[in-house]
Image 1 (cartoon, one colour):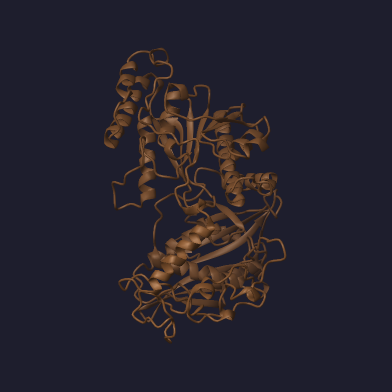
Image 2 (image 1 turned 180 degrees about the vertical axis):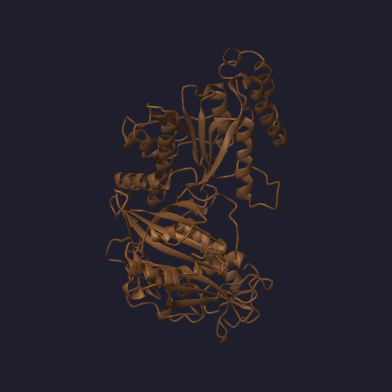
Length: 590
């Protein structure tokens, strides 16, 4: 089998050969992290199999002999190796009913993995893609150096469509370096793989349908937030919930679509999509958004402050949703548990809140995000839920969701379960220093009938601070631009005036200003004081320059860069404004 490319590992790598197989598993199970045109895969473990697995794909004796000469070592029964089949799930279905699969042979004895792609039609007939058989091998060279090699059976007839069949050079220049990095780092994620609770193929189809259906929202978005981020993020969250609920209906033989309430619904787009897709529900938020009026009367949105109490229970609702619900996040499993035994919940935590204020870190061995997710999972477990964790595919760093679909106790034990909930919330309240809790009274009332003993409107969230109806601006975003520019100029002049050389800027050294040897103005020529390469290339002739250079306008010695190397305009004559509407650029990585 011809060798096409090899790549050496950095010296002193201590993670091999185990790291190699960890990296290979990423490529096998999660190819979408590299190939952005793939949504995911569905893998079927084959265990230990013999040559019949390959014979099944080969109906040509000559082809069979050629392939087996290449695979003779891999299919040897006396060596440790396993096989599996993965089905490639494209982001956009361009294959119709034909399934694109790969038989994957892992040879642990010789540190190599071989991919045999084949296609399967709707009637179960298979066809081997002989020209796209390839192999990745780990080699130990000179007893010290490690290297990865890429081999292909017939590279001269390699076929590529950029989806199930990437370009051969892409495997060399993109995939292999990623495998080397993953094998060297050999890090396990704190969280689960994305979409671990859903059938990926159903998610992919649903997401493309909803994305096409609601993409027009980007053009009419009236909020100040980024329309593409928020529209496609909510489309992805809606897709997740719709597939999750469809699987639940199939599992429980339900016909009616699940109802929902979105607590802290924000812009309301998630409510709008779920309602349009046939699920009855509503959203509640402390502050109305401008976009609410665009949805129409069928999308039910209420402007109301939510305080955890008997007034905010939802006994007739199937699911409670907390999508970046901030201070309500820890309360949602509690509210769901107290609403009814059948009520479920979905939360996507973002900002770190406890029941009565900001969440305080307690562990330094975890990231703050992981610690907070574990806290909400603990709340869920104490509230009585069997809690599942998953990771969404959304344009956000906070992508981990928690789902409570079932209870960890039987209905007759509701009083004991409520007592555990109440004591837990009370313990968190005591730790926060908030006084005046009504929790203990609620515990006592649960020795009777909860539906009659509780007083309507009683607050078991006394001390909870809902968000203000008017959003307070806490940074400089609302300050007049002239004021901000003036402050910047005054600070710069103070720094410039603190240098020992006070000759009015005639020194050959560009004046960076100094305060205690630590604070100074950045010199864009210096690698140490800037994050740019010192070997700066000239600005492309067609590149835009829409803003003036601050240094050119205000520094006594002007900008340290020449005009052709500076991305900002050196004077009015150097401005290059855009004359065309901005277009989204797509990367053709494959």
